[in-house]
Image 1 (tube, rainbow, N blue to C red):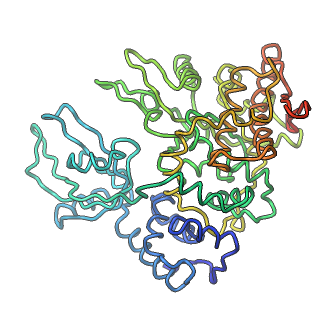
Image 2 (cartoon, rainbow, N blue to C red):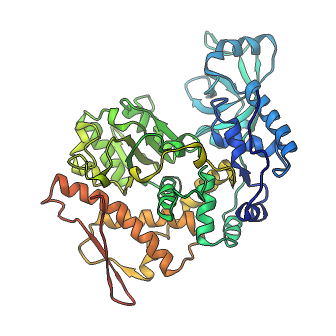
Image 3 (cartoon, rainbow, N blue to C red):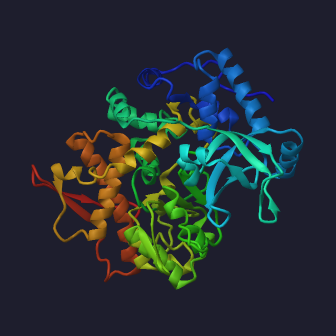
Length: 503
């Protein structure tokens, strides 16, 4: 197989500065594109492997050799879904077998004094023995799971009750970044202007920031998609055309996100299982849960809808005798066939959702933001960057471990501006603060910005919440009369008005 990469990689000024400020933590994104699609491994795993084998990213010969090594490892060691029985036979006949897979561990407290079972997601192997020492060393195995380089052996003497469980993980090495430092990250960020840093993040997402279709506004809208990864319990809806990359942040960008495709999502899987003892669901295991093709989903049971509402409001639910708390944000993604800017639209912009929730104002009032997906360009080959961005596993780990802990950025705008009395509801204020906080973490991770920077982020945060309020007004004008939002410049006393052009 021939791997196509940029024939002569010529780094631009931003590439060179990223290499200098973050050595070993940035990657040529054209290399990721050369491997993607060969396996079920997400981009963050592919990039980790590329970083290992492509040491000199400026030397095309070295890069090609590294790519061939990565391609060989992907083809040889990352299973396909139809290879389960072949893998099992190989482990039995020629142990040990090396596999690169997503490994997730759970404790079965009912067997003997407690047994850890590993599941190999891509190989579809369950009830694999794993030593407690490995679980204690890598606690993420018990949470989101870890893509790992493992050796699996066969021992048919391992029995529990009348059953034999012969598969054993004898070695495990995570195929992901180990340590991250927010202080080092902020120190590197200080070498870049606001717009340069935005471009670096946009390229990290895989888009070419210099493309003429990507205005500053479009770049900021791309970054809004990342807010649920840095902001706890951030709930957002995005409806727009197909093929604009709506699901990327949940399938490729971070191991802490998950995407649930169309169809009904079960309450046990999402919130808490009915097992004994009950087990918390995805809201306690992930940073973000994406709902794809949401128009095809079902929210028919009122009790189920109330669970969503309660969780989106407070970050926890009560089910039976158990209270489940989680930090995961909900993202509803869906496709629409109209453009509100053209004047052709539904009664309101929640109308494409399932009928049971389309007109439910209490449900929609919990969205922090409505992202106008119709503004984002469709993905075409020339929109995919061939330049440098952060290695996804590094940046996603930094988001998860460090940025989600920051809680003081939501009100930084109040140094220069104030809200207009009672015009904003408590949910408006909370939503705007969370969007502002998320954008600040992404663009100004140290928390230092100018007044004009704060105004830029505040205007967008208000607009995204206002789009929610305008749709609520369309559904119930008496309950939600607000169709504009204001804030006040404390220095000049000027009243700033935010309106929607696509309202």
